[in-house]
Structure formats: C-alpha cells, structure tokens
Image 1 (cartoon, rainbow, N blue to C red):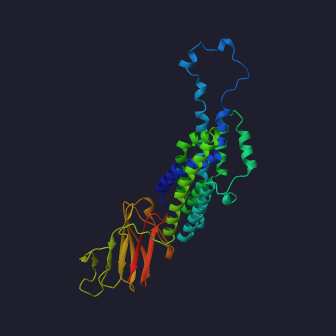
Image 2: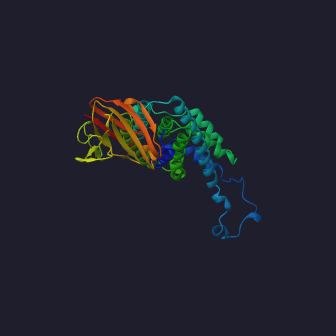
Image 3: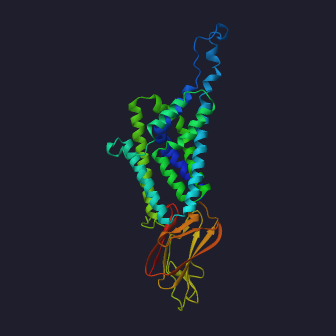
Length: 372
C-alpha cells in the first residue's frame, strides 16, 4: 500500500505532463460540444427595446460571455467524481486481491506497455492502431448527441461518463490504483490525475475541436513524446519494484559486521571503524541485525552483511513518509508499512551468499543487502 499523498502527487504530475493532451484527444470533442451548445442561440433578432445603445455592449459585455466557464467546471467536476470513485473501487479490488510485489510490478509493466502503444499511435504508427484501447464508436455518438441539450446538469453527466472513455494514460493510472491496494490511495491517484489534467483540459479540448489538422498533429506528436518518456520511466520503476534490477544512482554503504566472538563482537564496522550501534551488527548470541532508517528515503541504500547467520532487518521509521513507507522485498514476498516513528522487524532467516534487493512498492526507491 503506497502513501496516498505520494500517489496523489504521482497522479497529478502524470496528468499535468501527459494526461491533459492525451485525454483531450479522446474527450476534447465532448467538452467542446457541451460548452458551445450552451451558448445562447436566439431564433431571431432581439426586440428593439432589448437592444443596448450603440457602444454599450463593448463597454459592458453581456453576462452570457462567461457562461461557458460553468459547463467546463461542471464537466471537470463530474469527471473528478467518477474517476475518484473508480479509483476507490480499484483500490478495494487490489486490497482484496493482495497482489505480491512482483504481481504489482507485472501490472506496472502492463501499464507501461499500454502507454507505449498509445505513444506509437500518436506518432502515426498504423501497425499499433488496432491494439490501442478505444471506446465503441456508438458510445461516443450517444454522448455527443446528449451534449446538444441546454440542461445545466448535462456537462456534469458527460464528464462523469468519461470514465467509460479512457485514454491510454488513464488506463495506466487505473492499474496503479489497483496496485495501491487501498481505497483511499486508489482514489488519491485517480483524483490527482484528473486534477493534473484540469489546467490544460479546457484549452486543449478547444484546440482539438477548432484548430487545423496540422496543429492537432503537432500536439499529438508532443503528447506522444511525453507519454513515451513516462512509459520508459514506468518500465524502470517496475523492474526495480519486482526486484529484477537496481539502477545504482549512488547512495551510502554500510559495511559488514564484525564476526561474532571476535574483538569487536556486538559492534558494527562502518567505513573501516567500529561503532557501538551501526546499521549492521552481530550480538553476543551470533544473531545479525541490519538497520534501515526510513524517512522519505532509505538510509543507507547498500548493506554488506555476513552470510550464514540468523538475520533480522529492522525498519526504523523516523518521521517516515511517501512511497518509502511501503517497503517490499520482492524475492521474499515481504510487504510492510513502516511505522512513522518506530521499529518494524522483518525476519530474513539465515541467508546464503548473494544479493537481496528491496524497494518501495512503486519501485522509485531501492537498495540492496549483499551477504558474503
């Protein structure tokens, strides 16, 4: 289960960077139709008594000019409500299913593949056009016909229904909501995604509705570049979340503990010097303790420990937050929510020589314990 705040930020940033244009390509026509259909369309010229004096209209624009803002807000409010509810339901499903860390990583890879297909489709690669998920054409026609009414509730209902007309990036966010394993976290990632698309959605929807094909094509290519980048980033995170790879970006290292029974028994060796309470230590009974400090990050990120002795991993929360709290060891199927302040113990058993990888549930923060 990932931090709800971290997932809210993840959803919002994805929506802002990639979701606005991609969703506008699919749903922008619905938004533009809802807005333009609500503009007044009198059947004939206004009576003379109702006509403002010459020059008055220029100085005091009619209130009707601002009316399109109301249906835009209603559309986005309906969209926010439906996507938040869907995210909560997907989180409940993920919690009931309790996928393992590697099952979550596979779902992330599927999400990345969907985004890749969507990006290639935006680039105009015809070979993938049939593989990109699209809503039925009949469903889109029904929604467009409903946009012709003048009801105040119509834009909100259309916005609510967009949950059934997802773009590729939306589908990837839905998979992340499933992997969150929590209704609150699932709702957070989907709500964040809609919030992220909101600043650009109205403008991009209008552009896709009104501008020339040439401009729309440029926007499609730009969106494809962004979505492709997000897809590559998601693949990297999935590989780390599954424990299949660790992309070393540096970090601190804790050295191997002193052998039990030696001069430095019960003490740890860090940087060549013994310390009384280091991150790797062996007590008088020969049991090894590896201590990982969890704040918003992991510290250290690399451990060297002794193989062949009983080992306990202590997750020491110190005002911990973000994705780091959702700690996993994919190889062992370990999933723990680190205490905000306090210790959580994980029994690693007696490990043979080798490397054990750990990460947050989203694969954004990783580390290794090397037993030798």
